[in-house]
Amino acid sequence: MESLKEKVQEQITLAKQASRQMALFGRTEKDRALAAIGEQLLVDMDAILAANEQDLARAQADGQPASYLDRLRLTPDRVRDLVDGLHQLVSLEDPVGQVMERWTRPNGLAIEQVRVPLGVIGMVYEARPNVTIDAAAIALKTGNAIVLRGSHSAVSSNLALVSSIRTALKATGLAADAVQYLPFAEHASVDILCTANGLIDVIIPRGGAGLINRVLQISSVPVLETGVGNCHIFVDQSAQYDMAQSIVINAKTSRPAVCNAAETLLLHREWPLGYQSDLLGQLLDAGVEIRACEQTIALHPELSAHLQVASAADWDAEYSALILSVRTVDSLADAIQHIAQHSTGHSEAIITEDNESAHRFLATVDSTTVYHNASTRFTDGGEFGFGAEIGISTQKLHARGPMGLPALTSYKYVVRGTGQTR
Image (tube, helix red, strand yellow):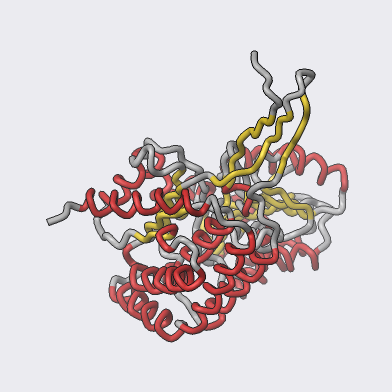
């Protein structure tokens, strides 16, 4: 009987072989395949949703929380959103083959720096079936092959989605083996993927801190780290109430389970207390559990019965739920210091009418995305115009922030001569 290692390596090897074929396809062939995947998803929607119901039933039986079920759930609208994302990708320029720079040396050598695919991408992710489509589509658009390993809790959904992808690839003549899915429940399958040096060119983990840290610890393949989102909003003393209320409510409640949702609210002590009380009341009315510092609770005795005292751990938490940490700060500098100490480097926002304060915040806060008078919920490849994203990188090399098409390319130098020797 074939061992787990042999089974995983067989799929990875097929992806490696397909990656060489993918390098030969141009934009026309790749876009045709992406459009076909979108059509196939609509054709297969009933089967996809039925598979997703199996995953949801298992997750509910296991007692998974509502936030987890939301990440796992597919609906007709969410499938159509995936198809829209594919259409948006089709409309985008293909970065592969783009000449980034060109110059001619004094000896006549003509040198070009040209974008090329990374090769074979290993993707390890948790219960978000949409990642299966987003990751595969971006990989294909950039001429890469991809080996997917989602959480076993979403295996029925993921296998149904990959079946649609491969059906469309076969129909359009693209390399179907460029998209592989590892259906194995054993965690050892992740270990094998992350140590497949020479076959896998980069590993991208996407999920919670536990998953990301495990991949970082075991991987001997380079890791393109996507980080957790402990995102902050600082309401400065000059903030307009209506704007602050709209932004904070949106950032916390529109989809609390996603990584760009706000987890900590910092309130300038000099922002009018009436505004502060109204905002906290609005959050409570929206079903948000507030964990506040002692100073915040003391400033709002009328709300004290509804506010929990924040623990030290709360300032570092990514809740992914309707929970918000709230802290009162004395100055912009205090807010920046708090973010520097507790941020995961994802997304931070300032709400202020003071342009000097906004400039200082935007210049000194060291996160992938910083906002002035806008919700952190915009940190997303689609919202940035990238089409579907493969993740949000919180590191500084090779990519940072929402990772669209260019993030899945490298470059090589193409040198043309007329017989030069050195």
